[in-house]
Image (cartoon, rainbow, N blue to C red):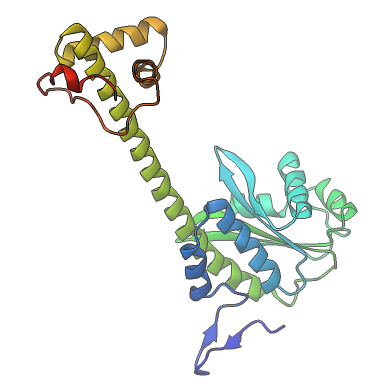
Length: 265
């Protein structure tokens, strides 16, 4: 396999191994979540990198290094050995933003006892390259091979592949963050709807204002040590004999609605 191929016009180079712009756009169009996207990256990397038998992506989550995706169980196991030892090529690549290449684990003297443990599990060559964008470390792309010196002639290919993968991962993380923000907003809106419906019930029962009804609900929430949203959900469900409606009954600051509109449907 050659490192690059000519483009259609024969005037330039094309990214290796399926990490071209079109394939990334396809993956985004068929968005199935960040994990699935990263999984796709590892599978493409194995196909793109001559000599690679397995691939994984190391990232930081909640202050800990984790394997965000791996194309096979072997890569995950090799990653976990490094996390447990807090040493190894992918750990150093993630922590220092540097490329780490091990031509032969049987001859490697760094990061003991990881090299011997990795070789015992069939990994002879390991290449960890940082996934970085604008000096910001996103993670590390880890390639494993059962052959010694598997990547010695393909280091430049791996560097370009990591650079292209970093761009894809950055886009994927942004999509995931925006999706989470939308979900958080939806949850907040649903919570507001449930609370408004509960306020409507209290207004109808006590003939009070919406602000007074809200105060009643807050006191009940504190007395029962239950979240306000959960208390309101329970009240609305018990009153209506079913889950809360997606709409709201009354908004704070509005006038009390007619009695026949405050009862759950």
